[in-house]
Length: 157
Image (cartoon, rainbow, N blue to C red):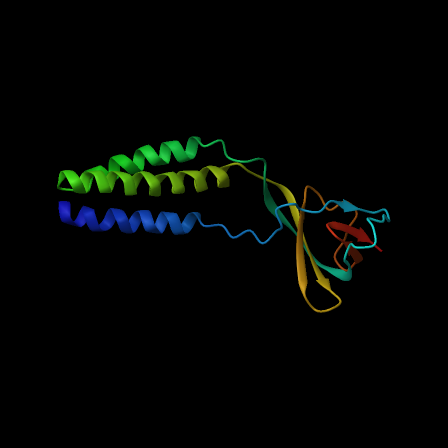
């Protein structure tokens, strides 16, 4: 029985860690949508394109405070210590469990702190590539609108 627990628990932890993975394709400093025409200088790259899609997404409210990592680390340490049969194994299991639990707890807290009031605007550029931007709301921007991208700003044409 104890042997099966030693096999099942790590597999379960690995599956939970994989489920927490989140691949954010948005840039960390999401640009601000504006209807106005502005100039940011001559060295700013300018691109043109068309809005391909606008979809509701969760935008993180702020950074996690660490409570999920601490709680996950404690739970992971306890579970890791229980899985070992020697004193050296208990220490290794406790450390590995604490690290794994902290990572899982942090991801769970980040996902729980997401606000679902945002939108992701995907723009197909004239050169065929796509870029995505996240905003609190799309304003009067609609699918099919022509846009100009200057640096980190998105302007409707």
